[in-house]
Amino acid sequence: MKLYVNEKLLSIHNKFYVRDENNKEVYEISSKVISIGNKTTITDIEGIKYLI
Image (cartoon, rainbow, N blue to C red; front, side):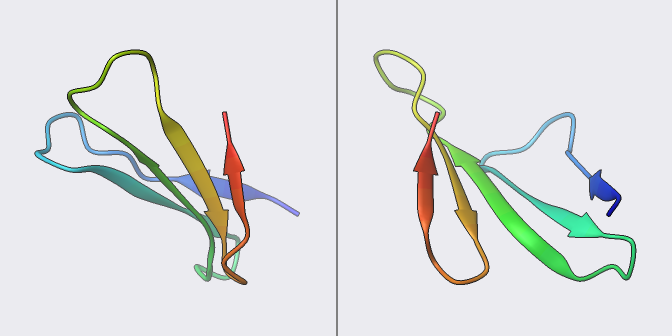
C-alpha cells in the first residue's frame, strides 16, 4: 500500500492527513504549534491515537 502526505509549508494549525492511493484518508497527524517539547499525535480512521 502506498501512502501520501500533503503537508502545507505555512499554516496556523499543524494538522494534515495521510491518504492511500485511492485518495482515502488513512491517518490524521496533528501537533501543537506552541508547547514545551514536541507533542505530535497520529490518529487512524477508527479513532485510535498514537503518540510520537
